[in-house]
Image (tube, rainbow, N blue to C red; front, side, top):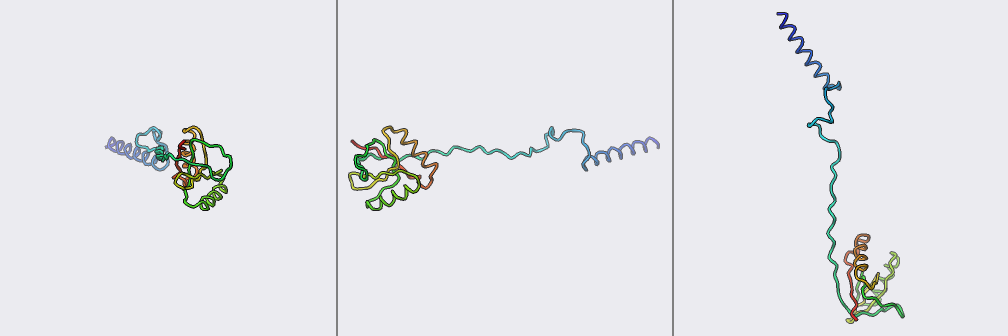
Length: 149
């Protein structure tokens, strides 16, 4: 009978110790090593690079409208097109207030192109288009004009 009391007492003591560890007491293992303890870190989401938007390219004969003796380039970054010169001039003023340095061009069909950059090499022109699309999303329809000789 004493053996039964001793075993019962031992069982009750171990249950009490186990319960004490659940109430803020110490446990026999470090929680960080437990396979059942969830990490409390915010999962990192890998940002997928946005695919580059295709650059529209047109080849046209153009002349500079608003600058006498202006340097002629092979590649122009076009941000706007107008049938009416006055509208192109108004748009140019708006772009000037935004920090751009626009130049007006006229193509062989009488359309006025508003260029915000010009280059003699194609890659810098394409890079400028990418930069504009990133920095000024409202101008994501900017395109590349190649001047015909």
